[in-house]
Length: 143
Image (tube, rainbow, N blue to C red; front, side, top):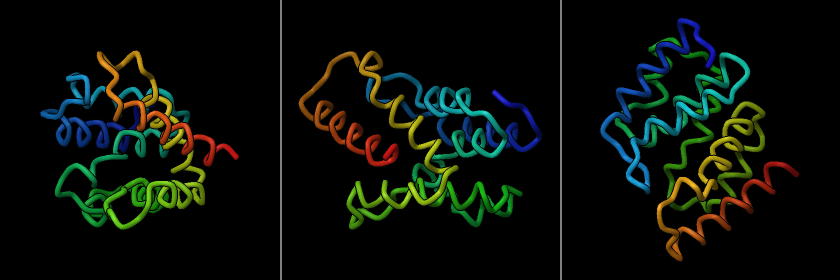
């Protein structure tokens, strides 16, 4: 993990947003963005990894994050990673992410972590479908 004043701000915001949430296997959700952040190599990607679901999972907006001092590079990546319009097909959403290298590196880490079946206690048919969807998304982002 990279510790700078802005990554610490993102770390606290991530924790405050996700502290009561759990993932599909019942683990604290906040472990997921923390794990992604630990994979990142610079300040901006660390911040985006920590905040990649904050807008989607809270009442916070991109404008709120801007007022907190996060830079435009970070905000643009978070905006692309926020899939909040159900009318946008998943692979179309992923194709838009591919236009931004910062969003792409975080989304690839996100997809790989979400594809780790050892995180799941039981794999339902829906989970298997999700794994296939993630596989297609990874292929789209890597090619």
